[in-house]
Amino acid sequence: MDKEQLRLSLNKFLKMYFNACREVYKEINFDRITKIQFRYLKAIRKFEKTTLTELADTFNISKPSMNEVIVKFEKSGLIDREKSTEDKRITVISLTEVGNTLATTNLLESQRAVNKINEALTEEEMTLLKNIFDRFEVDDE
Amino acid sequence: MDKEQLRLSLNKFLKMYFNACREVYKEINFDRITKIQFRYLKAIRKFEKTTLTELADTFNISKPSMNEVIVKFEKSGLIDREKSTEDKRITVISLTEVGNTLATTNLLESQRAVNKINEALTEEEMTLLKNIFDRFEVDDE
DNA sequence: TAATGATTAGGTAATACCTAACAAAAGGAG
DNA sequence: CTCCTTTTGTTAGGTATTACCTAATCATTA
Image (tube, rainbow over all chains, first blue to last red; front, side, top):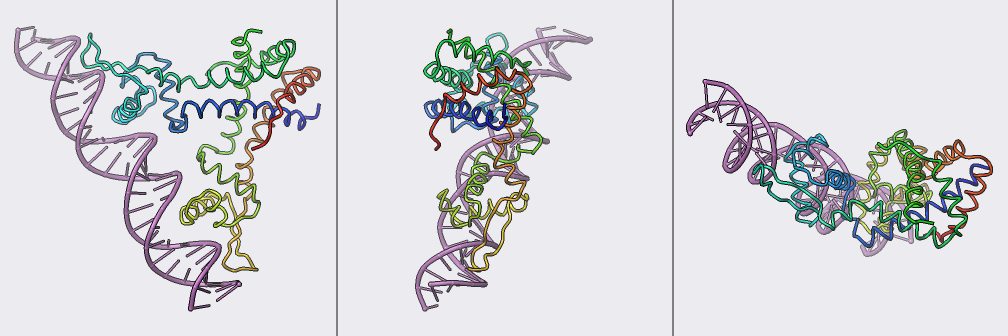
């Protein structure tokens, strides 16, 4: 098969996906969040419950720097902070519902894309596509 | 078909694509370029030859602001500037080869992805995939 | 001579980092 | 059980970069 032709076809599919992304981003006001902030949010989500020190260590930045981010996240309603009862020095950080929505945009985007796939293809085609997609299994980071 | 299963398979494919992107970005040092700078580059590419005023008007920012960006682009070797011979007030802006490469990253990324598809699939499967991709034709912006 | 294109000078606000210093709490040694 | 050290979080103050701004100026054209 001619690679350039396949590339152009791939771009059609990708364009559909990125449109789905843009739709979702618009709906949840994703624009205000920067790349690095998004990475912090995803880390908090991964930890479920975490602390300032753990986050600062994870990203190799100083605690005051991390604190700045965390304070801003709290003011924006993306995280909750609660004093630990066992160790009163510790403040437990977790995502609010809004923060969780932002941190999991990939879920929303791909769900949206799947809906579009569902609309465009037959059952048989979807099965074909799924089988082909499964051929691209990669290790997680 | 179960949508969640299809979504997980889609993610495998997307992960392959984004890995291809990351490979390319690493190779061409894309990290230093911000989102908005990328948009400016793409605009210069679209115009082929343009001027400061045209760019400032296009993005609705002041000419000094635009100038700042342009000067930085020139210092980074992304654009060339040449005085017009017809109207000596005008400086014509165009992309260098490096700038063009950056502005067209999508090309490099999707080419890379196609190579990975080529490695993973048979001729028959690629034809199938191409036909399915073609079902997602969208209007350009 | 007025208008246009580009540029310089100087300023603001936001982001993303930093070090130094410190209070509160916890933990261990004697 | 008290004293000392460590840990956690926070404040204060600082830097560099990005992305914008207005005002003013210079060269050129109409």
